[in-house]
Image 1 (tube, rainbow, N blue to C red):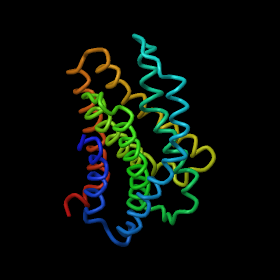
Image 2 (image 1 turned 180 degrees about the vertical axis):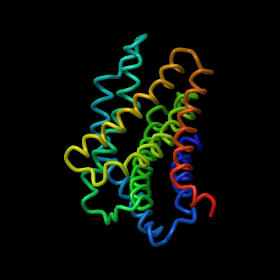
Image 3 (image 1 turned 45 degrees about the vertical axis):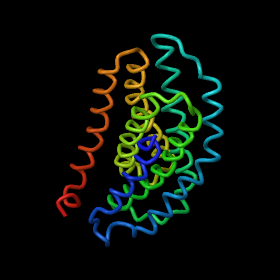
Length: 216
């Protein structure tokens, strides 16, 4: 349960404390405030997640099972988080540099998805399994990194760019849902491998995007 609740806040703390260029990156207080904004905007966003889960909470086999897991555990939280960010971003002080854009989007989504993990812990209280405790939080760590990296290509996320930004999040949700489907289809080894590739791919993209920061 500690991994479910603490994984994203700890990843956020790790990324924020890297030696970013102070001329190109926001200060840590700004990032912490942005993280808390993600936490606060989770609550209205959670209403949309609950509606989707109520409608698509079925659990069949094959494609219908994949569709249920995709909409319930990946796509609904992703689009709710991106929708909340798009509503809030006009009020943020965004400068457009790669570091600044990445960190602000990453901070907001980290706060939002941290709350998704907490509600998952409460929603499944007494029925925790490897899917809830380990697979979902791991996939959300990778998705948070991935969409924050992709966000730079759609700055400032208005009009067509806003739609494409949500499209990028949808693609990540489609990929991460594959691991969920494999685990629920009694293929834990394949599910773990798929999740590991997803998280490592996001981490590698981060390393390639900001090598100077990691060398520092």
